[in-house]
Image 1 (cartoon, one colour):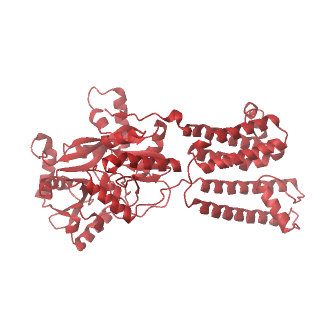
Image 2 (cartoon, helix red, strand yellow):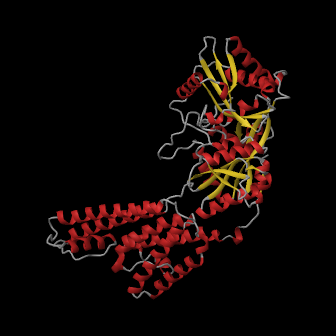
Image 3 (cartoon, one colour):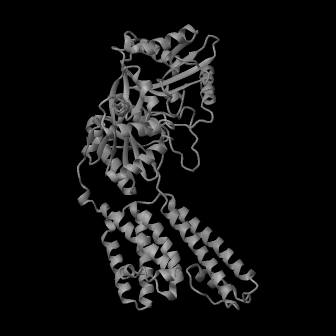
Length: 573
């Protein structure tokens, strides 16, 4: 059964708990302001709400549209505790206060003051720093969008045959800029219909400008930088000096950032995805300094208002994160083969034994070497074949994939290659070091035309050669929700477990969930629990979404990163 480890409950004293509430209030205020401006018939029905929330007076109804849209957009930033969103919401609400004051709306003015006071009192909740390079981007966006909108608006005025064209440049610009916020300018129109059409156009341009600026200002801050060579060397030293988890070597991925404990003797590797600081595996390095590394990582996440999340932590690692206030729930299990006890004998291993035997009888042969022992010509051949076999397929992997095959930096990695009777390459395995006596599977790929039993042959021959390589254990794939597949289909399973089992079977049609479990289970491995860690239960959907994107199970519409060959999900064993 899946285990749940609860972290320290600090939410009652955490000022961040107010952020979602204020986001909801500000969003509601924005929606009501827009509806009141564009749908006068709705006003009587909104009267109970307008008694407690400020809305714009009819004389300035047009100005409510850009302000309302801005407030709705800012509410998303408030929910993520962004400081810029708080400043923007305070400014926009102050504008509403000014409009209500000019209209002598006493009740609405008091309500606006109350909202401003609430924003001020909850200001400790909004600490999220902007992207270090975003100020320049915001200024460029503001100048560009404002300039383009001004040009379009001025052109619309001058080109309209029903408008008075003998305005001075100053009057023309005033008409355009005032129109952006829904206020009539100095231009005179012979037709009221023409005025309404042009004022609507200018107002929409103002909304577009406001949306562009706000979206850029609230753009999710990414990790300050990716890994640099000096940090990579420091991390390699920690990997060599201390006993670490089977996933620790994957912290050397090029797209992971590192944050170290103040002593420099422990580190956490992470990547920022959609506002989630996503760490993978356990803290690395000196056990006595790992808590300090976790604290440094959490402090950085708080400063940027990122949601901290961890995937693939071991039970010991999950306990370390739990001590720093996170909670943990078991996500699945890692398959680990013990070299000393692994054997092909017995009925339980008949499937593996027969599959490997068939591949051998067809003339398949394997070679097992360290990367440093493979000459450049053959290494290039392996790389080309891997790229060709994976062409057109989604490149998957984050927590248990290195993302670069045959890199000289990883000369201790072990490569298992398999060729058929004609000498043609048909499959490749790549495994990275796990301390000094183990390997962890990084890449498993084969030709689409490779016959049955090739992977079984490669795995079994690697295990048989392991003592010569000084290996005691080999980590294979990670099986998500292993216990559900193991127990959900047997007699006596409860209705909840059976339902969850059927859901996972359905999802397995799109993702390799069940097949990864079955492929690992046939080797009779030891199952090592892996956990996901999170601050609050409501953060789990965000962390799950970020994980699916990081592992490339879900691809959002954005520029595709260019990583070396091998950045992919491992195929079923």
